[in-house]
Image (cartoon, rainbow, N blue to C red; front, top):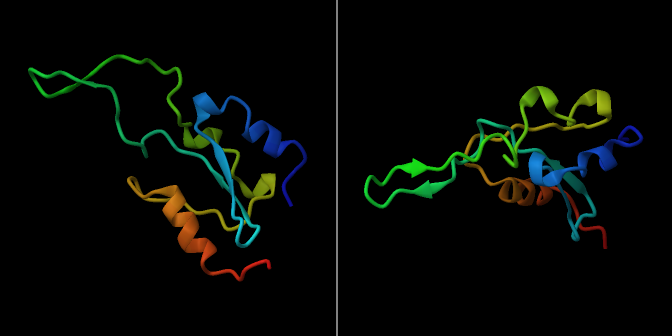
Length: 105
């Protein structure tokens, strides 16, 4: 059981944190996702002359958090915490995990 207020805090400022929640319609299970800085694809503008990534977007709206700022902890009531390798789709990982559980209907 999650601590009171964790879900609300989790879903606050999602443009900056990249956090999102997925609820499986098949199993009814809820999955919380936090992209971590360092485990995401670099994005920006490609310079057509040099073919290098350019653009200084600063630290605003990074769509990820530092691991030390994670809300997904046992202290907050989360169980079965998993860390994905860089490049692994969280939605595909959820699908594979969700396939292990029976339908709710």
